[in-house]
Length: 392
Image (tube, rainbow, N blue to C red; front, top):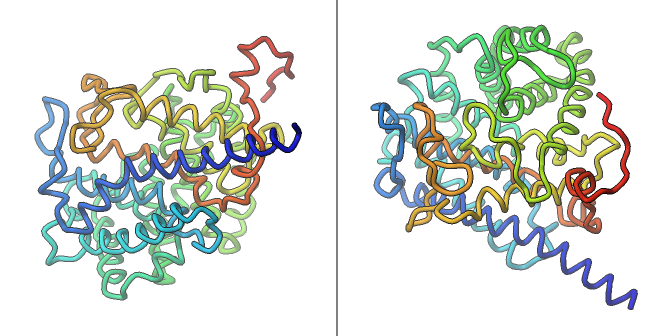
C-alpha cells in the first residue's frame, strides 16, 4: 500500500509540472509561433478599450516582451535536466522559436518589427524584455550577434523619454541592467535613482508605494518587487550601498511573498482589487519569482507554493471564453470581461500572465516540483485547521 501511495504521489507531481508547461504552450504558443513566422501583426487581434486609439503601435512589443519575461527561465533551463520526453521536445522547439521571434521583433526588415522609439509605453515593455535578458543570460548570449546588436540599440533608443515618478523608474533601471549584461556598459545613475527612490517609498509590512503613495493593487508584484530585487542582484558587488540594500529588499520580499500566498483562496480566487487586474495570474509574479530564486521564507514550503500558484493559474486561465477561437487571450480576469480593461490595456498587455510560470525554470528534481503536495495557507485556514498566527 505504501508503494502504491508513493506512485500516486509521484504521478500527481508529474501531472502538476506537465499541466504547467501545457498551459505555457497554450498561452505563449500563438505569440511565439506567429512571431517566428513573422505573422504576428497579421494574426493577433487587438482588443482594447473603446476610448483608446493608439494601442496598435504598442501591443506587439507588449506581447513579445511579456511572454518572454515569463518563459525566459524555462528557456534558460538545460534540456538535459528535463526528464519528460514531451517537455524536453517542447523546450527545444521553444528555444528555436524564441530566437526567431526575437529576430522578427527587432530586425528592421521584419514585417513584425515592433516599436521601441515612439511614445512612452515602449519604456515599459523594453523593460520586460530586459527582464527576460536577466532571467536567461545564456539563452540571450546564444542569439546571433546581429540580433543582439539591434536589440541593444533598441534598448538605448528608450533613453530619450522620461519615465514617470513611480514604478516606471524601475523600467529605466532594468533596461540599463540588461545593457550591462549585453555590453558591459550602462548608465548607473538611472539605476541608482530608481533604487534609492523605492527604498524611500517603502511603507512597511513588505509593501512599497507606487511612487510616494500606497496603492491597493498588485503592482508590488507586477513590477516593483521582482524588478527591484533583480536590479540589485544583477548589480551585485558593483556598489556598496546597493549590496547593503539587497538583503533588506529580499527580506521585505519574503514578507510580501507570505502576504501573496495568503491572498489565494482554496478555489484559486483572490481579491480583484486595483489596476491591471486583467493580467490574471501575473498578479503573483513576485511569489513565482521568489520560488524560482529559492528565496521563499521558511514559513512557505515550495510544494505549498506550487499548489497555490497552480490553483491561481487554473482559475484564471481555464475559465470559459478566456481565449478567442484562434487561441489568443481576451481581456478579463475570469473569462472575457472587457470592461475590466483600462485604456492602456490591449491584447498584447495580457501576456504578463506568463510571469506566473517562472518556476518552470527550476529543474524537475527541485523540491518545488519533486516534493509531495502540501496544502497552502488558504486551504488550511478555511478548512478549520489549526495554524500559527500571521505576523509581519
